[in-house]
Amino acid sequence: MTLVLAIESSCDETAAAVIEDGRTIHSNVVASQIDLHRRFGGVVPELAARSHIAAIQTVVSDAMVPVEGDWKALDAIAVTRGPGLVGCLLVGTRFAQAAALASRLPIVGISHLAGHVYSAWLGDVELEPPFLALVVSGGHTDCIMLHEHGRAEHIAGTRDDAVGEAFDKVARLLGLPYPGGPSIQRAASGVSPDAYQFPVPHLPDSFSYSGLKTAVRHAVDRLPDGARNAVGVPEDPSTVAELAAAFQKAAVMQLVDFVARVAEERNVDRIAVVGGVAANLALREAVAARFAGVHVSIPPFALCTDNAAMIGAAAFHHIHEASDSNVGFDVEPDLLTFA
Image (cartoon, rainbow, N blue to C red):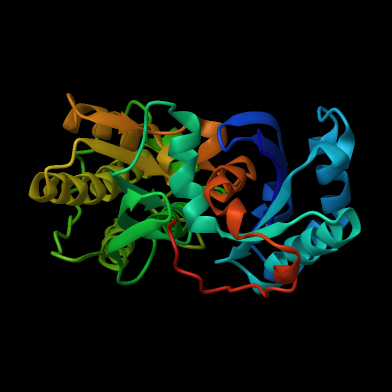
């Protein structure tokens, strides 16, 4: 048995978890900062880092409560080293490194993106590599192939906005609150997505959401006089709902169409959809409909958004790399590793 304390602080969630053998969750504690950043319409890095400092001791202590034998029962510590906001990453890594030194435990730095990929492995006991993974979040839109544990091939990324970033930006255009994903999903619920027709790019080697965001802006700008308020937001809730539904449909179609093409080209029979945007119901439904008959893994909602359990899962196959000599590793805000 390998028991790992995992810590995640790459953006606006302070999280800690204790994971056994990469797949059994003993605890998974998350302190969210959504209320802190909502008034700004997005994450403010300095505020996020300060909030991590205030929360991390309590979050880790809460995660350790179910562990019999306390720190002596642990075999290793894992922490997100990137990608993410540098100040936020530093809080988590320095805390984890200090804890590793104090407890004389080995420590391993893990990619946040690998964590998302392994959230599917954590949530589905039947899922094993090789599998195709769509990683969709506020900062990333990537398609990768996990050939085996520790070896991933990056197939495509976004040329501009990530899909989650586009949800946030479009939500602001429509006067909907942050975070944009849940707000647009609520606004679009039960509404026909066909009142507006937005572009769905089909690029051979990448995703793109800048054009879709601009198309929504133009649609709002073309509304008749008096249909927008003083800040340019549509006044009519039904118009907001129709725009939200049409945007969501186009955003989801690009993702599903791309994965379908790659899956057919590579004869893939296992697909995972992971990351914060994987919590979107329209995406989950579209994936289920499009890939009927294929082994599809989408983590439960709690494992889609940022959490430390996924970091513990990704760490399981790297624990043998941990040693007393690697405690001093630095953060990597631009890290692009998926395994």
